[in-house]
Length: 185
Image 1 (tube, rainbow, N blue to C red):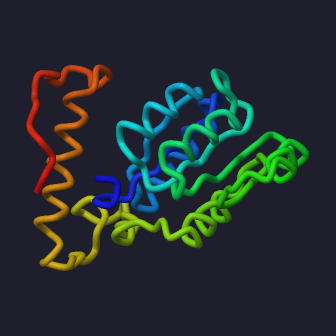
Image 2 (cartoon, helix red, strand yellow):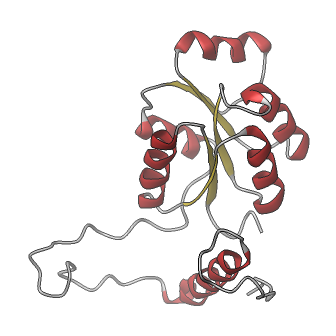
C-alpha cells in the first residue's frame, strides 16, 4: 500500500509546525499524516506505511532518536528527515552515526525539505493543481486542466480508498466507522 500513494508522516509536538508542514506538503500533492508524539508516530508508520517521515528530534513519548530507531526496525529503507529547534541538537544525530535523509533546524526550510524528499525518491504522483483566480466567474480556473486519462481510474480508486480509511478512523467526525471495504483497486 505504501507505494500506491505519496504519503508522508510529519511528527512534531508543536501544532503550528505540524499545520505548516501539512499545508505545504498537501499543496505539493502529498497525502500528509501527522503525529504529535513518538508512540503515535510508530503506530502511524506501522498502520499506513508512509513513503517518508519528517521527525522532530525533541518530541514526547520516546523522543526523536527512539522513534528513529523503531522506524528503522520497522522499515530500514524508509527515508527520515530530522528537524530540531537548534542546529546543535541536530549534531547529536550526526554524532550518533544515525542514517537520515536530511536534517533541518527551525524555522524550517520547507523547500529544502521538499528537495531532500526528492533526493530520497519521494515525490508526488502528479503536480498540484494550478492556483485559482478568485476573479474568474467559475471559481478560479481559466482553462480546463487535462490529466492523463490512463491514470483517472487510479485517482478515483485512491479517492475511494482515502474516504474509506477516513470513515474507519475514530476521529473522522460524523462518518460511519462501520465500513470495512478494502482499498484494493
